[in-house]
Each structure stands twice: as structure tokens, then as C-alpha cells.
Image (cartoon, rainbow, N blue to C red; front, top):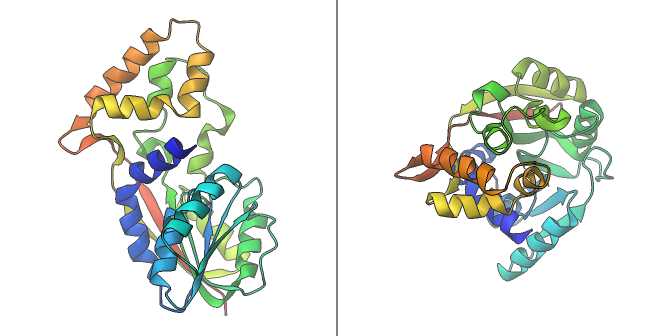
Length: 257
């Protein structure tokens, strides 16, 4: 799990800069971080909100344990983490000034209910800054690893979930219905980073569940799909490391007053 946490933070390092700029954390902000994972974005928010606080929420107890350890190591006293699904979690009414999320709000089973619950947790005039993926066809990395490991395999039913807010019309309707206004979309075109070199990228990916699962369910000898994966990574090797193009949105909005 620690390897996954480090991989995702490194993978999204370029995106993180854009989210931080869009969030514009203020000194006294009370911040809610949805899908915080190992807590990198929560810690950054807590550091900026020196007279405020930051609460990270995630469904992974293992990731939250890493988040708590790293926050303690950083000496942060204005940060906490809660295990739960933001769709149903019992947040304090109007308890937050700012809600942030780095690719954590696309996976709800019931998005209208989730966004309404989050809106309930925001004070009137409170802000959101969420980063989500654009449509699947605009993200080169999507499916590339799966196709390398198992060409022609059936696409899992949940494969499109990360892109569920990729259409601004759909996302805006959901947010408007939940009680948000001044909804805006800013495009982010940054590559995802898989490793400083092919060997590092292959080692990192080999530890991820999606790769382990694909190798467990193939009829081929493992060396064949792994060689295809290596070939894919080599094709994406640049001076900056192994990079795949991606397109995201930063969604900003305000809770209706």
C-alpha cells in the first residue's frame, strides 16, 4: 500500500500544482479533502491554513493510516483523517469553507446524493476545487496498460468510472442540482508520470493491483505480457521520464448563499 501511495503522488505531481493554485487556501480556511488517499493534498492544505484546519476523508483504512503517520511526522496539529464514503458520511452542517479533491469525486455510486451531502457540509459561499479526468478518449494512459497486458480483453464495467465527470454538461447539472453556483471548468493538460526510467516504471506498475490481477488471469506466460508492457513504457520514455498524455478539468464552484 505504501508503494501505491508513493506511486500515485508521483504520477500526479504535475497535476497537483494546478489543483493547489486553484484551491487558493486561505489562512483561516476549514478544508475538506474528498478521496484524500495518503493525504498529500490534505497536508498541503493544512500547511497553508495555518489558523484553520484540514480534514481528509477516504474509504481506504490502509491509505489513511499512511496519511496519519506522515502528518504526525510533519508535525501538523491542524489536520485529521476520517474513514468514510463522502456520499453518506455525517459531515457537520456548514462545517467547511473549502472542499478540495484530486481525482476523488468521480467514483460515487449515487453522484446526486454525494454532491448534495457535500454541499450540506459547505457553508453558504464556501468554495470547491475538484480535479477530475476529462473524457476517456482524451486520456492516452487509459486502457494502454490493460491492453498491453491483455490485448483484446473485455473492458471491465467500472473502467469508465474515472471519467464520469468528463462531460462538463453532466458535471454542471449535478453540481447545480446539489446547490452549487458559479461553476467553472479549467483545462489541465499535463502528462502522468510513471517513473524516471523504464525499469523504475515497470517496477512501480508491477506492484499495482491492476497489473497483478491481469497477470493472474492470463493464459500466457508472464514474461510475454510484461514484455509488451515494457515495450509500451519504452515508447513513452522522454527526457522527463516515462510520461503519458492526459487531460483533466479543475472544477470550481461556490455553495449557494
